[in-house]
Every structure is written in C-alpha cells, then in structure tokens.
Image (cartoon, rainbow, N blue to C red):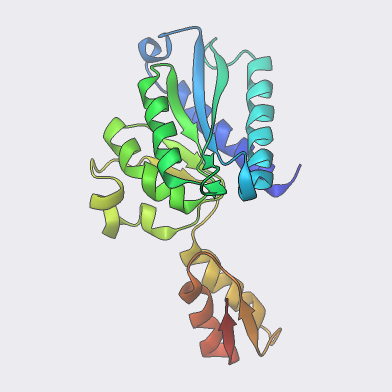
Length: 212
C-alpha cells in the first residue's frame, strides 16, 4: 500500500467516525450511507486519482465487512472530475459533481478533491450545504486559512479537512531539510503550488534557488 492509498484510507476512516456521531435519524434515511468521490479518473491526473479511488474502495470494503456504520453499509458514489477539454481535472466539473452529491440525500460526506484548484471551486459549495470533505492531496493553504473564510467557507463552519499538511508547512520544512546540515548549497524548485513557501527559507540559508 503506497502513502497516498494509506492516506485516503485514513480519510475514509475519519469520515466514518464523523458519520458515527450523527443522530440515528440522519443516517436512517436509507439502508446505505454514501460517500462521494469526485476524482480526475481520466486525463493526465488519472494515475494518482486511481490510487486514491482504490484506497477508498479498500477502506469501504473493510468497514462494510465489519458491519458498516451503525448497521448501515457504506457505498461510494464516484464521479470523474476531469474533462476532455481540460485534459485533466476541471474545477467546473468538480463543482458540478459536488452539487450532485449534495442533491443526493444519502451522501453524508465526501473524499477529495485531488487538486487544490478543485478545492477552491467546491469549498464554498460545501460550506453552503454544510457537508464535509477530506482530501489526501490538496495542499493549498488558502482554502482553510481564516483570512479567506468569506471566500471559501462563507457560512463559517469548517468543512474542508486534510490528511496531508499544506504548502505553508511542507515548503519551509523541505527547505530546512535540504540545507541542514549543509545537504545542499544550491537548490532547484519545481512546484505547482506555492514556490515562495519553499524558496524563501532555502534562499536565506543556502544561497541560490531556481524555480520552475
């Protein structure tokens, strides 16, 4: 089991803990409790998304084998968040998928998204619906930063959770690892996230940093 698969398994277990705390009347809407998964299963992001899907399916199967949640079985409701036009994940498609989750009374929570671009699109939707999601891979710090609450969670309640930390923590700590003790004097940074979070502490302690 790779780290991403383990992470998504932990996410499903965390969601189950949340479902277990809900009043019985909420869960008893049907014999099945659904967990939404919106993942870019086609296009350039498909490999990583497939690992996440398999991790979720494994966790759900194990939980169901032990009797489910309060006697109710878990079921994955899976949608592709990639589009042919984008060739990868598409934030607009992710938003559409999450609206479908919210419209389904048996979907209690969701796992995902894979990418922070999707996260920015879905977080306000989740906030309005008071539905939680847990992501194993979205690391943009703005989505959960209190400074951006009015943008990403307008109703105030936390709805966006992670099993991975944000770029604001990963960047400086990766930089510190590289330059202490003198592992590197020059660094090259490739990132689609927050290059300043990575480069700033490195430059201040090791010297030149290039980013791409």
